[in-house]
Image (cartoon, rainbow, N blue to C red; front, side, top):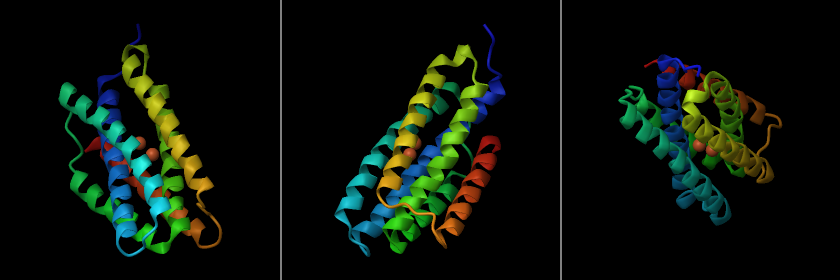
Length: 177
Ligand SMILES: [Fe+2]
Ligand SMILES: [Fe+2]
């Protein structure tokens, strides 16, 4: 059986661990705004549900990090801060921006996970199956975001591009260190 390169596995787990944690932080930031300055119970319940899935994703990668002795990215504290900031800021801007934040991130993650699925060989079947399942969850989140008002009209296209670029930079850094 063809084996997956160990370095590739480490990069995949390190970056996904960071990304899923970032997703939780974005939702925490959004919930903070929705609990205080911009009360919206309906949006809150959608975000809480999605956060619940991200927690399941994060816990899987966190246990893999420990089991395989992989070093998490050193930038976790920075991503935490930026995630909460992005979440809080987007929620303050309103429902369209809140949901666009999810849509933009998930569009990056959908591709990102697809790339990883192509890199993993059959010897990493369990990891592959998990990523496949998580990718379906993220696509579902993206659909919820568009159904709930995510918009790329006008100035929102700029926000979409900024979030996508930021996410891609964070991904490239978190793979390596
Ligand atoms: Fe996730
Ligand atoms: Fe998600």
